[in-house]
Length: 137
Image 1 (spheres, one colour):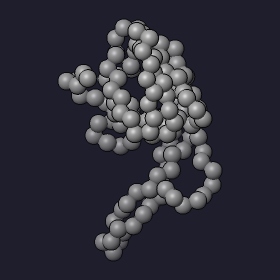
Image 2 (cartoon, one colour):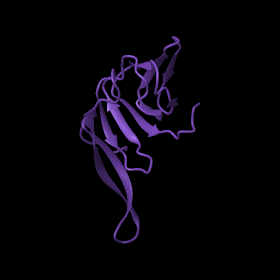
Image 3 (tube, one colour):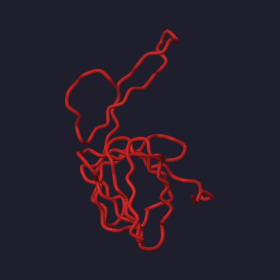
C-alpha cells in the first residue's frame, strides 16, 4: 500500500482488497487482519500470527525477533520472507541467509532441527505455507 497513514500497529496487518462495488465495477477496500502472539515452535520466541483465509491455511507472521533455540519445523512448510533477513543454521553447522522473496522449504519436522537468527532491523515478516506431503526438497 502506498498511501501514507498512521504508524503501523504491531497487532494489526493493514491490507487492500480489490472488490466489486454496487455498480459492478471494481474498487479498493481497506481492511485489517488481527495478529495475535503465538508460540510457533518450542524454543522460538512468540510471534504475531494472522491466518490468511485460503484453502491451504497460509499464515502471515510478524515478529520483532526471529532468534531461536534449535527446533524442528512445527510442520512441513514453505517459509517466504517478506521483510527482513534471517540466517538459518542447520545441525551440521551450515548457515544460509534468506531475505524478501526467498522461498525456504522446512521439512525437518523430526530430529534436532535448526536455529534461526534475525539479521538487521525488525520487524521480520514471513508467510508460512503448508507443504504437500510429497515435497521433500
